[in-house]
Each structure stands twice: as structure tokens, then as C-alpha cells.
Image 1 (cartoon, rainbow, N blue to C red):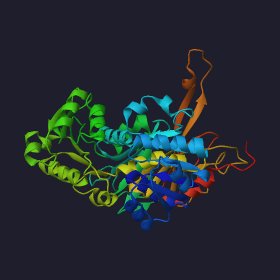
Image 2 (image 1 turned 90 degrees about the vertical axis):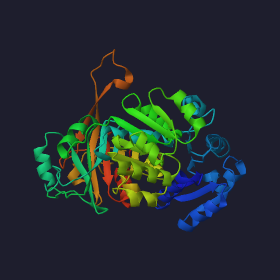
Image 3 (image 1 turned 180 degrees about the vertical axis):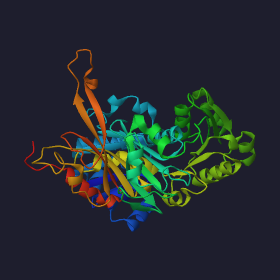
Image 4 (image 1 turned 60 degrees about the vertical axis):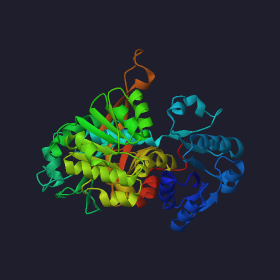
Length: 472
């Protein structure tokens, strides 16, 4: 595909890196020529220096024959205007905009074709808020990702020495567990291991399993020791993410938020109703001690500064905080810190990139989640066609020509409900979550959750799910 990325910040650079590696024709536009030069030195892509909301710059970038515009600059207004120009002047087929302001998101009519012509909008701050909230809801997990409108969850956990996971083959786990769950992948010393029936889990392994969302709590209880429920949360940083996170948590947890700016603190205190808002530096050891950071179930640092997030998490952990989560913009930092004294290091770009990749993937791809800081992926694909036109429909899972290292974790199947005038149209179906087994047969319109330990396998998966030319 020919894709133009507007904005070379963290999100834009991460998307460019991911898409270039998949042999797409990429052009990046930014006002910062130095940043563009650094991207060109690292990746095989074109760059154009200039304002993304100017028609001449878009034309120079190749908008006349582009397949997609990804507008991810820091400015919502620039992103929306660029999408409108791409639609009006260049008839670009797909236009995606990063929109951060809640005011815009609360008025979706602004994004319609007759207005700003945004096909899809993403809000990285909201995606990150939901991501962190899930980690707090399931404190045993390293990652919790949802598919099929929340009906299926993929969860990563660390296997410890006293865990029921350790030393047992996967066939034993399946036999002993009354709940339906599938181990999709195991990572040992940063290397993906294909799960086989006799594969034994070792202490320190990162285990990804998939199950119906309603069963996740019970599956976690069986697979490893349960952490105590989270009650107390401290947030370092009251910016967009910190404020959203506090608002999402304050009704269910005891939340304290530390913000450096006194002016911002006053505004936060008016906006947040049950959160204790404090003015100060999240790396101030005396402040953390006086506010009992060591007694927190979760300490979450989400300022705009990586060093502040790292140091405040290390201080809170040393004081006794049970779990610390740091937002780290530099992916190299995140790789170094994960699983050390910092329990979870989140790369904002990697956490949000899946929302963009779902629109780039070929075939009918509903959702994409980037895993292992971009090394692996999980995809939700819809199976179309019939046994003649499709490589997957009408076939058992063990008959599919999956590349080595790819696993089908679950299938979500829709069943028509009995006709009932009282049933609303959107609720006129029953959904069945099927944890994939070797004899599971894929049916038309099934949503299939596929895990790949190496994202280089994705094109093969996409090709497998594409239907023949004759299919209508």
C-alpha cells in the first residue's frame, strides 16, 4: 500500500517502522526536518518537510495516488484539516486522524464525509487509559487485550516458581482445568516457543493465554497464584493520561494523584471528584513517604518525562509499593526495564499502534494488538467465502496451512436468535466463544483470533484468509 504518515513523533515513527518492515510505500510529513532525517537514516521511506495541512505539501507527498492518510501530528486541527483536504482534493480512499480533545470526540458528526471526512479516529490517551485500567483490574497480568468487542481476552502472565503453571505439560493443564482456555504462546528469554501438548512451562516464562473474557478471572486463579485485589492506586502525573486514568479509577479504587504544576492541580481538583490531588514532584522522596507510596497496591507514573517515570517508580518500589507501572516513550528504555524492578514498562506508541494497523492489514481484519513491544502480534480476522473460495472456511484448525509460530487461539461465532419483536436489532444475535482445538472447524463469518510470535508472519496469515477472485 502507498501510505502517507503525517507527523513524525512517537506514534508516527512507530507506525512508520512497523509498516516499512511490511514492504509498504511510506512517505512521512513533518515540520521538523531533523526528525525526518533521523527516520530516513533508519528506514527505507520518503520524507517531506512542511505543514501537513497545506495542499501543496500533501501533493508533494503523493496524496494524488495514496491509498491511505494517517494524520497523527500533535495538532487535532491539523489532522482533521489534512483529512478534509485528502478527501476533497485528492479523493484518498482511507483517512485516519489522531484526535486527543474530548470536545471533538463528543461530536462525531464533525468527522462525517460532509464535514472533516475522517473515516476513523484514534485517541492514544484513551487507548492507554483503558490499557492501564485493565492491568489494574487484573494485577497478576503483564498485558490484557480484548477482541470481538470485548468477548475474548488475551492475557500475558509471568510464571513463578510456586505457580501451578510451572513444570507441567500443556496437555496436563488442559486436562486439569474445567475452564476453556488456550495457551497461545510462550516467551522464554525473549524467544518465542510454539506451544505443543508436551511443552512444559518454566519459571520466568511469559505465558499468553486466550479465553472468553467472562472466564479470565477464574482462569487466572487456576493458572497462577492470585494477587490481592487492588484497593489503593497512586498516579504520578496529571496530564491527559493521568487525568483520564484517575477519572476511570476513582469510583472503584482509592486514588491519589501527584501533579507538579499548582495551576494544573487546581483544575484537576475541580474535575476529579473522589481523587486526592496533590501538588508536588513525583520523584520527591519525602512527598512519597508522607503520602504512603509504599502502601500502594499500584503506583503508576504517566508524566511526559521518561526519567521522572522511571525514578518515581523505582522510589515507590523501594518503599514497598506492590506493583509499579511506568510509561516509557523510548522503546529501548522499555525493553531494558521490563521485568526488572519496574513491573510493567508501557511504550505508548506500541500500545496504540494496533488501532492503526487494523486498518492497514489486508483481508477483513477487525483488530490488531502489538505484543512483546512490537515483536509479536495478535489479529482478529473474519473468515469469508466457502470451502471452494477460502483456504480456511470448512477446514479444521489442524488442516490449516499456518506458518510455523502462528496459533489460532479462539473463534467467535454468531448465531441468529429466534425472532422476537422485543429484541433490538443490535442484540438479535447470540455469540459463542470457542477456544480453538485441533478439530475446530472454521465457518463463514467466524471471527478468528490468531497469534503470531513474529510479525514477519503476518502477510502469510493475511493471504491465508483472503478469498478467491470468484467469491461474491
